[in-house]
Image (cartoon, rainbow over all chains, first blue to last red):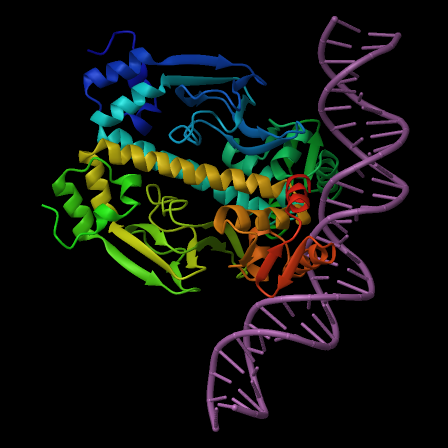
Length: 229
Length: 229
DNA sequence: CGCGGCTTTGATGTTCATCAAGTAAAGTGG
DNA sequence: CCACTTTACTTGATGAACATCAAAGCCGCG
């Protein structure tokens, strides 16, 4: 029996994983889940803590990152709902290898990991869905990091701006969800040089910049810098 | 019934994935598998080709890499048996996103992917094993690429040498399985600068180099370069 | 108002890619 | 097996890309 107060049936994310559940299984998912809200800047997952839950993003935007011994952050990826769920590490490790923080106000939904593991025993399509999504998440992160690695700074920054415009906001004018330092952490360069690159794009008439607000003026040039820079 | 000529029961890799199979399932695995031998330098998987099989490495050493439009290779990872199986992409994509080539004479064992998918329906522990291994493979590649990204050239080369000595060969004297160019493809720098760095290590008395043969003379210095450089 | 964090610009030296040239090694055909 | 070709390796010189250090402007917040 699905409890009356269960709204999982209406959740788009249900179809990513919890297809073909019988009603007893749906009930486990629905009554066991916990929704949590996080304000911009709030920590969602802390590196080194025990993995107890399967967490996915219902709304908002988050960054995954690793902090090294010198307190320097490296951003692994940035993700919207559907494009990231906490699948890295959770089936192979006891603790998280990375942290997750909200870049915008975000909502997560979490389930007890042991419940998921039990459900896998009974439901092969859940297992396949998990395999598919984990494969997607990992592929995307790996390919993205190769993309960044092969470019110079200008290309990396351009790539990041195009990513925000096309994939995240679907608009050529948007507010950067990252500080300059975070952009640097993502592309693997210093804050100063990221700023210098942005200023250069501005001077060349490719961008308009008002603090965190970015307006892409000449997208075709920006795209060619992203590709060949 | 397990056929008499089946040697899967003796294979160490069986225990990674095919635990808890009943005999009918074991038979599918055993009679459906194909073993292939590859000489050093031979292509095992070609980027862009259809994914039809689940392939894992029985012996040898391989490189995973991506070739860009300008024919430049980027090495994603290098792997021994157990530490890599073709789990990336195979549950999320139709075609391979990367190529695999043998760095030493290698043997693979492959199964038809559709058979694996059918087995998942009947056997939850296979699904869990696959989830665990995919999670491990992806984690390792992602964390490794972050490690490399945060270092300068000297640190990257030192890191790679320590990796060969400790993880791959368990000896401080070994033959490099990579050409200078391949080392460059892996650390994301030019061939010339990799060579210069090796020469510098040699001049500083950290290494002895005879062509492809490397002898680590001062491992503690090399390790500190790998960590802090 | 003033403090602290984020941002911006400049100056300087280091790290690195590129170009050029030469040497060693490895494969090829007669 | 040797001349020949090709490929891998090595070193040097040069300028571009980048990190680091320093200093100043900006902005929100107590």
